[in-house]
Structure formats: structure tokens, C-alpha cells
Image (tube, rainbow, N blue to C red; front, side, top):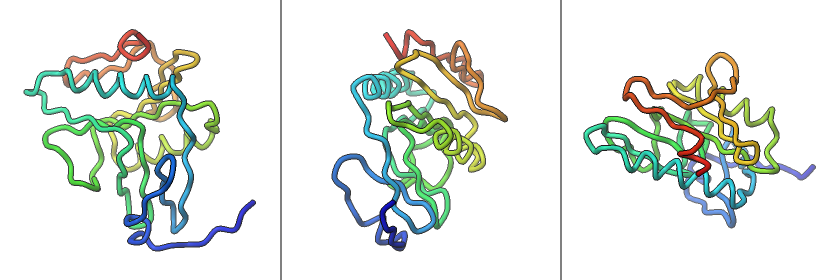
Length: 165
């Protein structure tokens, strides 16, 4: 294991990183998994799905955007969808949806803990997409495999065909 050096959130927020952006957890900069093509394709299709919804729904998707959960925690969901109005440059209020797309080197337990953090922060819809198995999961009390990812308040349902083609 390498040596870890604590930094301030201000220093983290003013730092750019080579490769994928890093998350910030309790003073420590944490690397994220490197995405591959199936990951990127699913991520792009999810953003496109929400961009294609009518403007009257006021849904604002984004990918790999830093979200400030607390003064000690900044996470980066693969896809987030805000509702009502576009968020600030560094969102500090929960989005409507937070989506993680599995990468080959993701550790299942760490991904599940991250999904639970989104729920605890107040994200109403927390989803997990596995591009290799083509499976979808919703995180409520537990992580549950689902056939589709519904947004009943908008009468929208994201299907495997929408994500995997």
C-alpha cells in the first residue's frame, strides 16, 4: 500500500488529475476505476436518453461531475440527472438520479457502499448498470436486480434496449 497524504477540500477542488478524475473522501484523494468502451457507451447512451426527453420535464443529465456531499466528501457518479433547474458548477444538492456503470476493475463492495452514500445523501433514484452482463440494478434498502429502471413520477422507464442497444 502507498502512503496517503491528507489534503484540504479546497486543494482537491483546485486540482486536475491525469486520466480519470479522482474523488475526495475525508481528506484523501481516491482513484476511480478506468472505464472501457462498454462502460463509456452505456454512459453516453444514458445521457442521450435523458437529453432526448422533452424540455418541459426539466431533466438535466451530466456525466462524471463532481458532487459535494459534505465538506469532507466529493463523489463523481458516472451519470447524474438533476430536475427542476440546472445545478451549480459544483452541485451540493442531491440529483434526482445517480447512476454508476460498472468497469471491469470495480470492486462490488466498494460500488455498493458508494450507491448507499448517494441514498443517504438523499438521491431518490440510485441505479447500477453492468454493461458486460447487461443487467440493471436499483439501490433502495438493498441492491436489487430489475428489468427496467423506472421513473414513475415522469412516466419514464429506461429499458435495457435504451442502454445496451
